[in-house]
Amino acid sequence: MNCQKFESLAADLARGEMMEVDVLSDARAHQAECSSCSLRLHDEEMLTRGLHSVAVEMNSLQASEATEHSLLASFRQHSVVVPLTSTRTYRPYWLTAVAAILLIVFGLAAVVWKGSNQPKNQIAVQPVPQAPTEIKDNKNLVAPDNHVANLPAPSKPKRNFNPRVLQTRNSKANRAENTVANHAEVATDFMPLGYLNPALLQDGGQIVRVEVPRTTMASFGLPVNMDRYNERVKADVLLGVDGVPHAIRFVQDKRSQ
Amino acid sequence: MKPKTDLTDAELLRLMMSGDEESFTLLYKRRHPSIYRFALQMSGSQQVAEDVTHDVFLFLMKDGHVFDPNRGSVSSFLFGVARNYVLRRFRGDQLTVPFADGEDDEPFDQVGSEPDPLEDLTKAEMIDNVRRAVLSLPERYREVVVLCELQELSYGETAEILGCAIGTVRSRLHRARGLLLAKLRPNKEAEVLSSTVVESARCFA
Image (cartoon, rainbow over all chains, first blue to last red; front, side):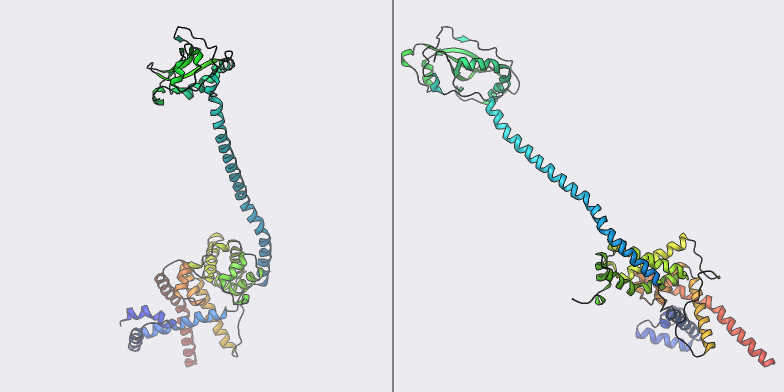
């Protein structure tokens, strides 16, 4: 071991730090050989003793009782303040939670209310289907020879047309007329003429009033008064934009019932 | 259920944070002397030591929840807080190390009684010299000497408090001891010189 290595270990040797046995024996051997390193270790040991004396000297020192009393007073005051602080801290969270719950409840209520309203609207919009039996007694149905008669002015073809939408949109405009008409006429539900693809009615359509032979009703499974089989009956035919008829319903004047 | 005096510092701190005054008192009585001495050894001022001790435990009762047992002991935590307060006083209050006579520069209470007054005087003088030499060290060396030598903490605990590596603590302590020896050596040489002069005077007498 050389002097530089010993100097790095001198403090640990003086402080009694644990080290490997080989290193310790080498250091002791070098100390015995080198007077300057021996003096250095002596100085380090003196310093260690001096520092230890200072530590022992101050070992019994502590803060005054006034500090302890002051801290205890602060602690009691702080203990009183703590609940207030915590309450103040958590109050906004409770308010937020209550507000969130209320929002959820109102949101759910709105969804339920809307859901319950939608079927009602549809039911209100849909025309009341008339039972075929209502036109059983169609004794006074007019049977003119002209085969087409225009019904209330057909509305302009609209996009996204379908029978339900048409009825819904026309319901406002025709409500008064329909109300009057409903008082004057009864009608069956629309019956498809062959396969009715709703997509064909997307671009619009038209309803025309026609008169057909009463026997036509039989082809749709409706009862026919055989005493009046040679008369004509009113019918509404639903035409697509291409002019192809898609559905038909039979109409009867109430007066004639 | 074990008595509170047997509880660890961390358990006392937890109870203290829930408002238990007895736990606070126990923790204070257990830990405040070392904190007070650390502040006193760092500053050399009893008033500063009192203030720092007060501030450390005031911080503990208000912000004790920031203590993380995974990062170290309560003792190390308190030393770290005390160190910050001491350094803050050094920088904020422009505190001067009381080498010169000042209001706070009161001699520490003497402990024990020695039969020989001369030996008492010599020892007291030696202790005073060492204390002054420690106080004259730069802060980063002083705190290592105070923690490792005067508080007798391990390198690991000191590194934990200072937030540095153990190797850094070792190197700083080595450097600090070298500085202390350099500061104390003139006194020693002067003593040797004075004793030589006396001996010479006796010879010539």
